Length: 229
Ligand code: SF4
Image 1 (cartoon, protein in one colour):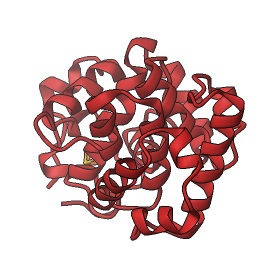
Image 2 (cartoon, rainbow, N blue to C red):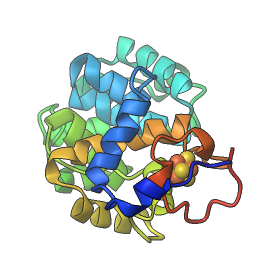
Image 3 (cartoon, rainbow, N blue to C red):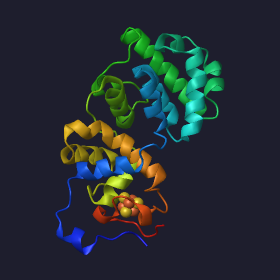
């Protein structure tokens, strides 16, 4: 059975969302971070963060990690990637989801970065969103992890958990991004993605969340949760 708020807790004011987020972070401390976060921690290279985020779309973390390592071994910079043959890129990133489309997308992006930005990934949401194939989720992750600029990156885990918790009531990720930026102080915007992605992978899973052992169950509205462990 899911944890319920105790009589004592029920009489106490609900903590700020940032306090609940920190409790989630403590509960999953020591577990594996999302693959792009791991890559960002290794060298904070915006190029690697951008490309690995694009590779990670609809792809499992371990597949993304291995594909990114193979690709960066032959293309450590945007300039090198821009000059690679398409087939070689496909071979390096296989079996990430949609590897043929992604190979073309990342090569085209690398060519634009090389031609228009001197080989350096631009550090603004606007410039990143102007690159074909880069959406808000990817752009937010690049500016936050690569340039340390506060941004809330909303992926499927962030969108799902924010709605289940009752923090937001949104249908579109863009609306979730706006609502979470209003809910959380800027100082924790960058933490929102990494904490909720990891929490979504380990505890608040899509189909049957582990509500009975969830560290923040007493503060969760469990909106739309019909089945749980
Ligand atoms: S839905 Fe369940 S697992 Fe997810 S945050 Fe709420 S109580 Fe925790």
